[in-house]
Image (cartoon, rainbow, N blue to C red; front, side, top):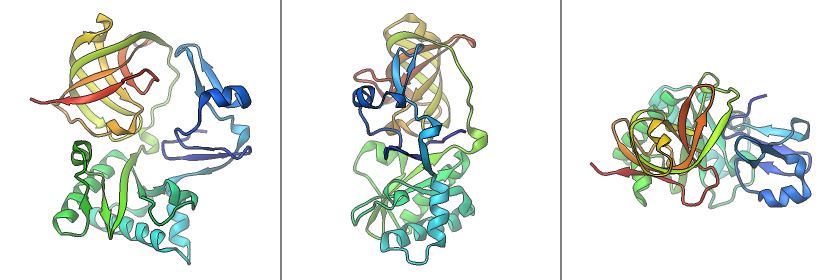
Length: 276
């Protein structure tokens, strides 16, 4: 069974797993069955046993349930209205949209965000363009509270409620395979983005070239990909941009390739744009 970013696992023990939220140290002491030790990465990772999964909440099924619901509350009604608007403007069928976060779980309140999922890279790009046009028309307001939000254009307000739009890979966009990895420690590099087609997902992937090592192993000159597990760095760099990256240098042994991973657990990992 393959779970995607955005899927929420509800276990028999009452835990809700959605990317982060629990301390590994606590689970190591009281619920070790939820942890897996990776010899390659040399650390414990959360790995929920399938036999303990009670229910799986997916964004697409959550939207289907909302569309069928007769007595939607005002926030549920508003997120459905927003998604239908985006669907009409982009000609993307509703089946490629979803609802996640607190609304998906029915745990939302008056100040909750409207978390919208869009399946597929091309669909997500179309939705972002639609949001820009809707702002020009005065239908929505995009957030300008930070440079990251200005660049990404995926956060804003619709009828006085805050929304966040994120992308989820389609089934055919998921590439799963076992990899033997060797760690080469922390590295800080400067590089140029040559492919940002998977930058909107989590993990976000940037293909890079022309790497210059600032700190760490000289092997970092061979880095071909920057992989971010941190949602903040989705869609912040475009093809042709120069970026500075600090993270864990990993070598994929079978392919003899190198990548830098942000979100490995090291302190002060980051990614930033270099002005040109």
